[in-house]
Image (cartoon, rainbow, N blue to C red; front, top):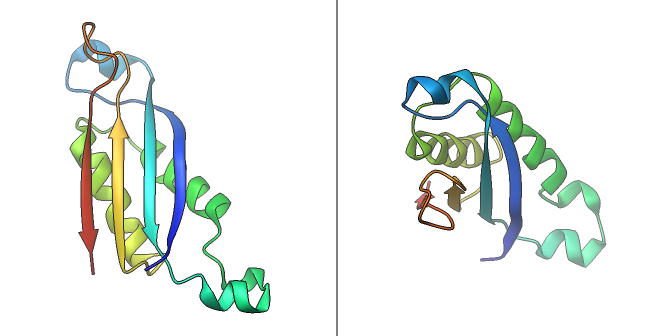
Length: 116
């Protein structure tokens, strides 16, 4: 299966379990591997048959910034569900990183894979 990739999608949102985190935005960095059959689009050079990464990116930003979320695990699940149901992808891999969450680590995060 082919993939559509969105790498390093930066989203500023309210995320976290601590009171101070609920008072300010923090940045999440998201990588997406989205299963998608690109053959029809490529064969006909037809934009109408692609999974538009701009549309996907804007939808994910709207989804994650709509309301505060406590856990990056929840962020990952919401994104996976959106891609599987709204965009009809057969499978996805979602990585959500929260830079700066642990002072002694460059980055921390979660990665999930889901399919229909």
